[in-house]
Image (cartoon, rainbow, N blue to C red):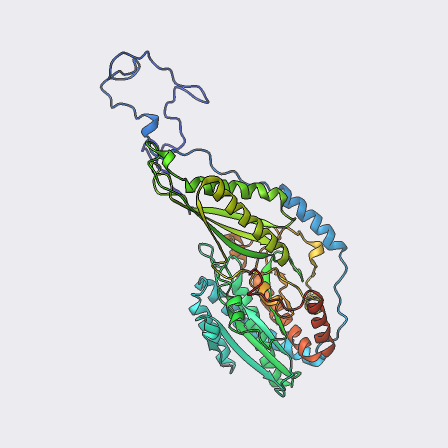
Length: 508
């Protein structure tokens, strides 16, 4: 949003910040005449017949300093360190064979043939820029493309109007046949559009699924089941958790998806996130005549904000708290009866996220006691997200396939640890083995959730990423279906990391 300020002399040729009087400059004040006595005094230097000069107190909107531009020094240093670490990083290898060479070749050929359709799909979703739970055109276009390839998709799955599911059954549908889910996202951000590149995620997932569909028509792929899930509202709505609670991942043995980024990384950290709302209830009173009769809810909110800020010094490395006061009262002359804050609370591990949650509850309750206000603490008005757990054997298969396409794939050891956001795929990854690698479409210093990143979401680099990702996800899925040793290793890695969690009841 741009603010156009017109609080100056009204002459369109005069800059808004031009001095009002050319007789002074810098910090020198203009010369003033001696004041005359009486109610209607004027400066001796002024023309008594002219209109009285507007006082400083009644000039309306005044513009002070503009925001400063953040320095790039730190990011430049991080980029240099990352380049050194990346150059020294060993190539990622896999101990597993995966799908046969002939199956892999058929999948690659199918993926290559789909690229024009996938790029077109990506661009259409980009133009729609539909926000969470409102992605009606995006999901309709996905279903239409699937239908053109002979696949009937269910739109409105798992109780969500813009969720989608499609299924490919390969070979004998034995009860113990493995099932892998490929996940798509397609929601945009308000004001930014696809500044997180979910149009690329959607096209890549659809491309991976259709690559397997088309390859299976030319040769018999290993037996199993492949699901395509369209998952709405990743940006704050946590659609995957809603789908999970409706049973979407029951019977699923692995889940895979990608996310665009400024690096190629197999295991980029995504941290857990909860939403906290703190409401303080005070006693209203006249702020001038009888403030002693009031209990100030805004004071409580202010103290909460400051105490939370002081807590930041003592957080675990990587933890994050950021918030706003969403309601601070109605009028200055009334002691505020109600105030509300909203925080996003993030941590690297589920256990430390629980610890941090308890600290913030203590702050909320302690300040209520100190200010004589009532307090209400509400957690997770929308489902929380868990820290993402990567599956190493599956991540290694992804890296091998991407290296074969000319990408230099890194691990989190080589990239800045502070580049951590949150995703509802974390909730999937603690239910079943999963991967959520990031794939480069932009320079490393371009931030997600910006208009600048959105510009890269339909670039040539984005089209290349769709080609590489659709092939890579399809090949990882085929590897999982074909290689029983890979499946066993993926499960062992998942169990060693803590196994399946009771996500819904974790913070109860």
